[in-house]
Image (cartoon, rainbow, N blue to C red):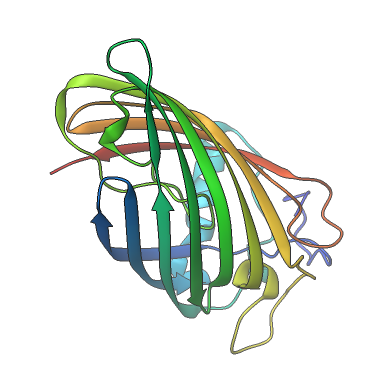
Length: 235
């Protein structure tokens, strides 16, 4: 909720929740098209350790202690199956090594955590673009790539993307699947604007993404804006 210092239940605002998960995936890359199939398994509720993570982090950075975790979603195992396809058009620029690309994408997600369909597109410009299809991101989001090609030279790019999602289920808004819990009235359509930069050298890739997300539920005070830092290591 907007005021995390309140201990009582705050009606009409997003429930407290954590999501602890692991995932496996299969990727098929033909050079100008990528198909990605992924499975996530995890848990929502106290077993996710969301309370411990947020409370500890707030202590480290001197932020107010979140007091409302007593009202978090109940423990529930989660399963998410995702499929997406991306098409890339790569354009060489007059400067050696520099290029730009445009990558439309379409995908679907089904499970008790998320169920939605998505359409989007991402544009990039930089040096040595063929290494990947964008940085990885926490779902739901524009698709990125968990993998990249290892090369012993510096590569970098700037990117911007948009995605629209038709939401069937979002446990973090709808509440628990098999028991009663706090919930809010979600919106059926949600949009994201994302932009940022990525840099890679050898086995390492570092990226920063800024996300602006349209209102996800009725009564929300305004769009969410947050950042994501990713460090990937190939092995």
